[in-house]
Image (cartoon, rainbow over all chains, first blue to last red; front, side):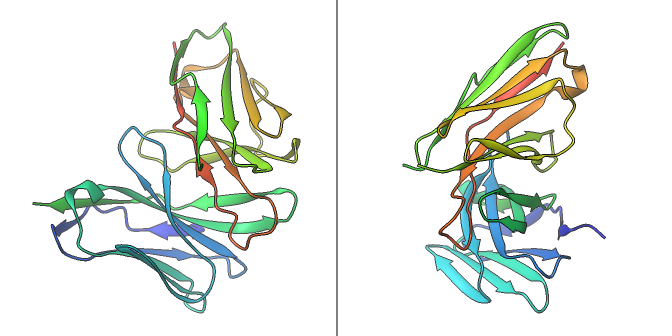
Length: 115
Length: 115
């Protein structure tokens, strides 16, 4: 079983709709969770981080975390063509205070927002 | 200022060359990272530095040699690379204490081609 799993997509949604991206992880001691957006040929851009159960909202983005189900999701409201990108879920499996932190990435979900 | 810079943007090198990739951050972060990313794959951790000391080496071949001259700078020295080492090399930085999430911020990357 992979440590962090995402559906590779592509996930196609019409402009203005809600895009829902999902991620599951296998390690119950995982502490914090991240969503990165990556455009083709560019580097990953951090868009959301979450570490407590529940929802965290930032503009059109909402991250949802359910540690009991080992599940983290990202909702994008009012999707725009500029949201078309690959979304990487990342999980911090080892928090080493004073030793840096190891992120494990899912394989990413490609989102296409259609006009 | 959440910016990590990397130079050069692109690098083409032969298998007998020696070259270096450079990374700089001015966010006061004390952890810095090197990742390698192949096309359509997630970033793969190579090295982690914390407080200028190497804390994680993910069994990277010795033809890759990291260096952290000070808390703002990170180098990756390359020697005798193979064509399969061609990839996008990403630098990232994060806080190393005082936050529950330890967000990592990526630089724009260096696109490396080994001929």
